[in-house]
Length: 337
Picture 1 (cartoon, rainbow, N blue to C red):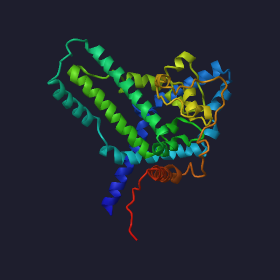
Picture 2: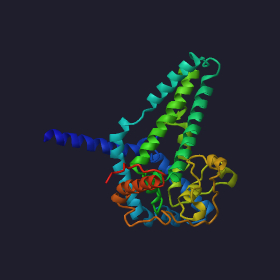
Picture 3: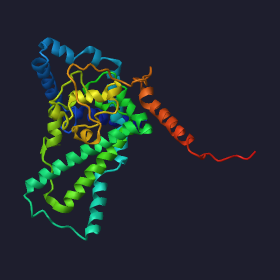
Picture 4: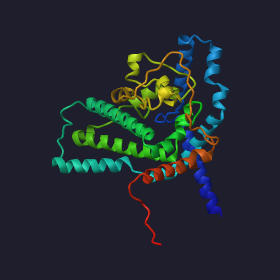
């Protein structure tokens, strides 16, 4: 009995530590520095661009209808529960070191040894190139996985958990089904493992990341310049040509919009250039009032734990059965009379 209590106590301490550490880890989206910079940017936008008084600006940012709504409370619950689930699951998922080793070993066999290019270029150019390549490849992979989550019906069954949010706040980014979290974890391992193996194969020990406070310089910059405003009550637009390259908060609001013209638009995370290239880009408009949620798919339990965790499995099973019902043959064995 004492052993069981000790295990539970250790697990609880690990969970609290993991959850609280996110606010002090620059590699996490909700690092306090990023939250603070987003707050400052939001205030400047509302005061200087929207010409709203300071009092009204603060009221809009901390609107009670957003922060204490059923939707927001569901965001917080999912974040807390998923922290526990991923602590249990993450050690059993594909690791980037495994991917890097397999790719590196395969390239050795393919090219019959390494080319040793580390003496050709200065170390800073190798570090910058690796950091930029990893950022671009990671964002490109996020774009396509995100697009598939919308386009593939069985994947949409799980991704719609995120889109069931009817208001947006910085913690909405964590409103994801564990199945989606696992898919993004595998994607991350594949991308980071591939990029690491490629650069180590060509440049050896000269490969390093250019970092600020332990985070990639590009990830740090993206988060510092208001990544948390993509899920927030403040819709900040960019200069239209810039919105063809970088994803503005207003463009991500469009992605969450229930309007028909906004469906399956703006899948990009940091960069919108992928949407521009592959035809899913939608630019923001001034004074555009949007509603969020699942257009025509809302349910009474969409903010409940049952609706957030169990309903997607039921919906995915329905998609699976409908798919096989359209096949010209049966997957079930015939029984003789």
